[in-house]
Amino acid sequence: MTLRDDVVILDVKVRLIQEADLPALEWGGEYSHFRYLYREIFENSVRKEAVLWVADHKNAGLVGQLFVQLISKRKKLADGSLRAYFFGFRIQSLYRGMGVGTALLNMAEQDLLNRGYRWAILNVNRENTLAQRFYRRSGYRIVSAETGRWSYIDNTGQRRLVNEPAWRMMKKLSQ
Image (tube, rainbow, N blue to C red; front, side, top):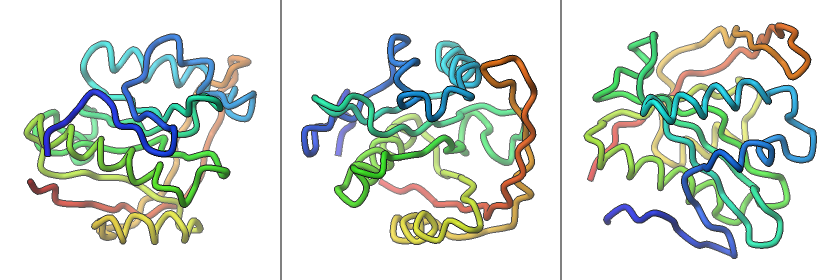
């Protein structure tokens, strides 16, 4: 399978993000607290340190997203050559179970293979059993526990601390 620029499924196009998409990632205000984080991640993509995928419905707009960190200070997650880290993966509830998440995940994995990467790594909230099941069906396996402690600056300029205990999952990518 060769990577194309986009895939259309159920009137949803999986494509790389554009700068003009950043406000739509806030999903009508639900994720406005991540505004500066989204900008930072987009800037990482401009520097070729990350790849940002979105699922764009022809009528509803952005209904899904998946961010891929190619290079990280934490080399165990993303080393710039063999391992990449998936994060910020979400699908609007109305579009779950329709193949949108699978299409996003498959596109991101194929892109990594084309870049020469061999491992995809992610963290999943320990309480999110539906996501864990999805990742297991997609070939990921739990390799360790993760504290899930991190922070970011929200849209009001305040630092927010996050504590989401997670499972680290990993998949060996193959052609």
